[in-house]
Length: 475
Image 1 (tube, rainbow, N blue to C red):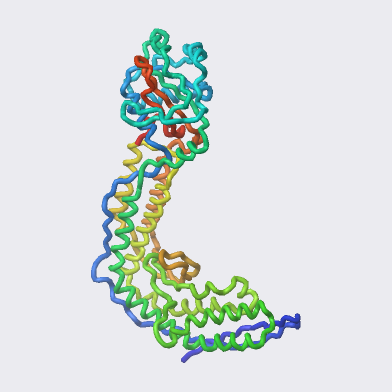
Image 2: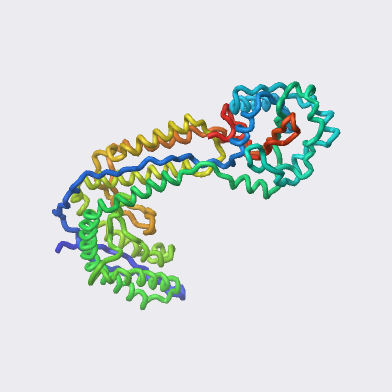
């Protein structure tokens, strides 16, 4: 059998600080066989069906905006009373847009606070910054919060002449709620992608059976070749470490040698039976790699201190065991693996987009995004061509498995699906609106002029109430 001569220099040091002694050792490893094995292609074309599922990216915000919109629709004319923090012309325009987006037929008959200044002073300034309590329910049967010393339910609202015919007063301002209230606001969520992401997970899980014939065959070939490699190298490596343990007096070197010895002992079962840590095909990653749990017990400083990196010796053996079979995997299998991985990539894009965020978007933009996702989902198995295997290195994190050391990856010369996924991500994030808001809480109160009753009151973040030309709280 052809041998490859590997020469290593092992430095042995003593605790007393004696000069290092260089010991030249030789290790022999088996060359990989030229494999003529041909793995059978799949019997059917790989297909994956992603069921339609209604979804909406998660917004940090409550239903307050939607309730405000419904409450505004019940009136034909209002007066807008802004607080001190919203006194500029810019805010007047924003509030006008919000009101019109909620109810196009509504008229703002007055918006000058000066009309009510005298009356407000008679009853005390509106206490926006006091303790909140549940004050009752609005006309929709939903609870609203008010300051404990709210003065608005008074007889002065009977003076309709001063209100220029307004049916209701919209009182709005930025506020600084107590810490607990602010925490509650930040915990509010609208929207969910759970059904969509769950359907992708289920489709991904259901497709695992398709790859079982390939996994069975390729993993056996990899394990047999890796075992052949170890039978040549493992006894030598273990003897080398045993000799070094007996010769060194350095406690740090001794700790490293013992760690290496424990690591290599976990590969001993490969010599006589199953080889748990041999290279395997991880179909989730479209990659071949090795479970590196045995190496986790080796301190990170050891390779630099010892002269020989025994972890690298094992991964190199795995790489040599992998290479002969890369040309044996039919392109149909390789294409299917990349298609499956693309499902994972699609989920990653959607998960990022669906994460809770301070934002808004229009119903039209959201539907366009849903259509785009649906179109890619339906055609995902037709997007990869010219799939091949390439030697590779590095590490990857595999769910339910842990960290693996990569020895080869499936790739394609023209990955038009990944191009589409990148475009999809840009399109999805482009529909977000008002992401540059200062995330300030805003209180809105509606007072019925006829009855002096507060029929709506709520608090939410600024962008959930006022955002461009969008009605509050939609979609």
